[in-house]
Length: 494
Image 1: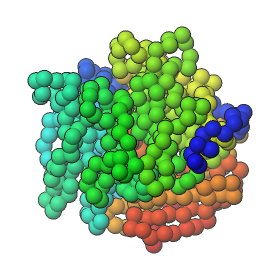
Image 2: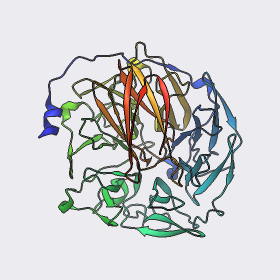
Image 3: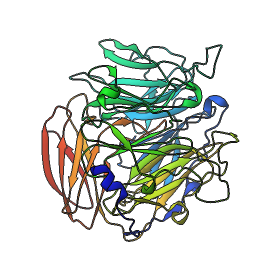
Image 4: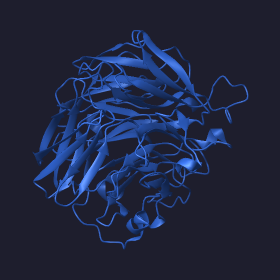
């Protein structure tokens, strides 16, 4: 089997630039994600450009503290901005709801979720009622979105955690999830059930090549009878064994998705308590767990003497040293005081070798924080072509690290634009090809843990000086163009 050959190939010594980061957290406005049991989970970060200066800005959940908007002023200087005061925020995702070129925010909360409409210059207004979002009082912890056919607005999917109104809860009291479908005067709420307490969801092409909603669910509260879920978007049904989908149960926290072995279908990392489960896609349908020797399970702390299992939250693939291979960051941290899990639980930075295996570098890189980390983002804050890191922590301040890795490879960023309602081409598939390899990346909203980014997509190119960028647009149109390395490319659908 192709996947097995990829996994069991011999170990090679690390090649390319070893990662190195500077801690620039003192430059951030002080902000802490905090709160009681309803904020044991969440703590997401949304990263996007809120004022058109091409510098990534940050919206961070606060839990019982107010959420905050942080403007990036360049050279790792940041300013806290005024934003509609919101408490109870678990996370947020950037999304251009009305194709006006200003990024909006879908804000997840314990209570009524909110849509903050971007007005430009990092100014936002609450447009929840204006856009006709149905009222709710749920505990929302997951989000994803897509555009259907010629719809003027996106379909929104919200994952709800434990039903706080269930008198027999919290165990076996998972709430139902919501599909918000647009119509002329607003949105209708369609229940998606059964719900098994999702902490992450992602709409993307699955191993079959079909748009599918993946839900990663926390078995801590569904206890029994639940499992991870895959829901076919076109057929509007859950997948089963006949589709190549075999149910698995884990303490699902986050989703990261990237084609790792060059077969043009996304492989999927699922964070959890204990093992972090990487599933390789079998083209045509189904998934198989990665071999342990791959180095991605990250099941226990990699420093210290605490032998108890780790707790993984946000996971994200990104090319840290621009060698053309996706690396993996995993935010770690105890839920709060769970005695069976590690308390000093350092974050992971797993670098990918040429043979496809991964090795741990967080300590050497300077990012092995042992706070209770939750959300995170790999993003180029200073636009020098190297991915930096921001991390949200429970009951501890935000952290930001500048990537100062030496001798990194070349890179490009790719921004997609359309003229229709789906301005950012959600659902498109990008392929970046050099003489050495091809990299495939889907344009999606969702995944992570309670947060994500909507920015030009970053690709490391190793020593290549140019690359061919091919795009399959959401309507099936195909385009291709050659671009120079070390450039920020905007590709517009013809």
